[in-house]
Structures are given as C-alpha cells and as structure tokens.
Image (cartoon, rainbow, N blue to C red; front, side):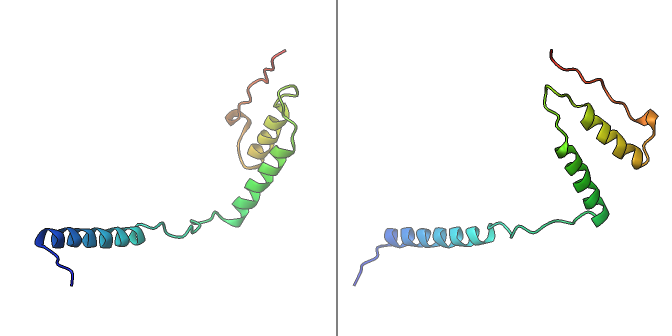
Length: 96
C-alpha cells in the first residue's frame, strides 16, 4: 500500500486539477472548423473574376509599363457607372 502523506496528497491533487484544466482548456480553445463566411452575390464574384483574369493576362512588366492595366481598369470603371471626371489616370513613368 502506498503511503500518501498530506504534502504528497496536495501535490497530486494540484497536478490532477492542473491536468484536468489543461485538458479542458485545449478542447475548449480548439479552433472552430474553417467555415467560409458570407459570400458576395454570384454576379459580384463573376465580375471580380473577370477583372482579375483581364489584369493577369496583361503583360505589365517594368520595361513595358502599366498603361494597358490602367486602360482595363478604366474600361471596367466606366462600364459600371463612373464618369470621366471621377477617374484619374496618372502617367506611366518608366526608368530609362
């Protein structure tokens, strides 16, 4: 038979409580499953995908410049209600 003295009982009780709290804390603090949040309407997702596709297809490296990228963005902005006075395109400055 094991002789648990009062000090040893307190230590074992403390370890037992700590282990129980750690076990409960890790299960309670576990991250919830990665659930998607609310999604934008399908038309918005389609428009975003189209804009992204058009921008990715443009060659806009430093030597070529970004005028083509700006033209695509201006086209989309105008198609969706922006006026010329609301759109400002800065000049394409390239290192020579």
